[in-house]
Length: 277
Image (cartoon, rainbow, N blue to C red; front, side):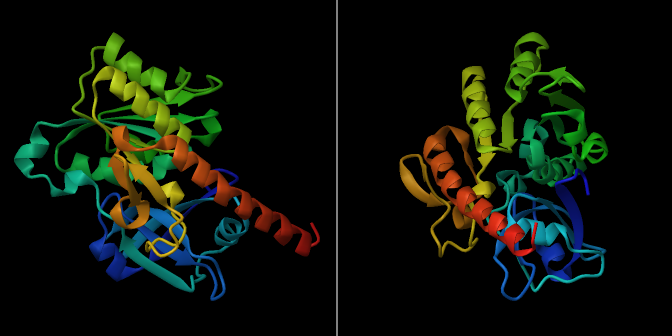
């Protein structure tokens, strides 16, 4: 347990680990009759044949996953799914001239880590901003410190690092500290990615966002992850989850996300009633 409601698991899945790339995700079903839950790959070890997933306990299905113990088995683990991060297709020469800034919010820090790690292993300069409500909710701190050039912690209450929003830190780094970046990547709550995109646009900085929180089925069949990108309907699970932030209709995406969260919370409420809680 990284926090009281966020758990990290290493899953033995050798073929998945061998094929995984940053930006991709997998789908798990805890039981035969369980819901399909898309989870971004937070790390992978090709030699050990394992992938790491991080799950935030929100509703009935995620609670079921977080309750599992070492030695238990999922009914299904499917992946890797989704389009890998754009930089995985770049040549060594193209990567040499890049300087990345990652903006991670809450549990979004977990899928940021494998991207930063991949770039670090290839000698690319990477800074990371991690935002959380309080210091106790900052995850992947040591892991991130080991693979990035500079780590900037932001907390809402000022209990650690910079007191304020990740967007304010981004502006500070560029406008006050003279930092220069060629590419920003934001992963976290939809509202954070929206304002990170607005801030990046103000700074003239290209930005990629991950719409992994929209996914339900993960294969394009259910249509839950439909989102307007550059005026066209796209499916986050099969055409993403990463897109150019400037092109995403965040207001539409947040409305869609809210619809499914309500159903999940209702299911969790009924589950607790059934357990006599």
